[in-house]
Length: 105
Image 1 (cartoon, helix red, strand yellow):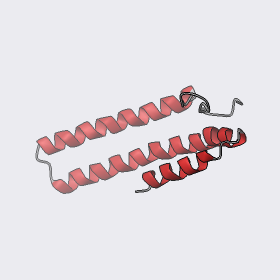
Image 2 (cartoon, helix red, strand yellow):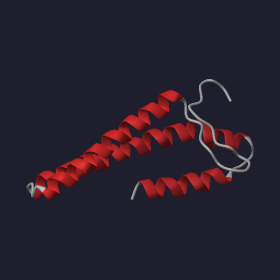
Image 3 (cartoon, one colour):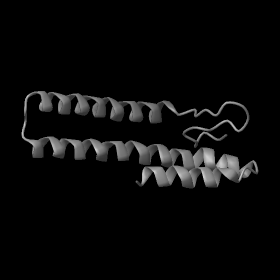
Image 4 (cartoon, one colour):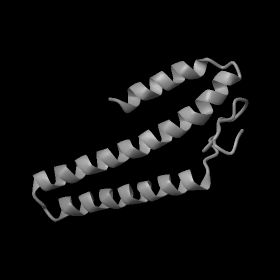
């Protein structure tokens, strides 16, 4: 593994990602923000805020989650997928396609 990789996935045994501190921090910050947005929507519902305003907040949350997914997918493709292909494990392509289909629903 080179220093350029953000993380790698184990090919044998348990599958794990080893994210760099920078990637972990970025993902954690984004997820903390999303968690706060979700709590905010809950509060809006409890306060009977106008539905359209709540729906706009939900759209913002979905967009933020998509951003987390894109960042993770990019990192995964640049490290785990490449490493597994180089190791002769071409099943990773089918796995990746299934995951991408789930993300694009």
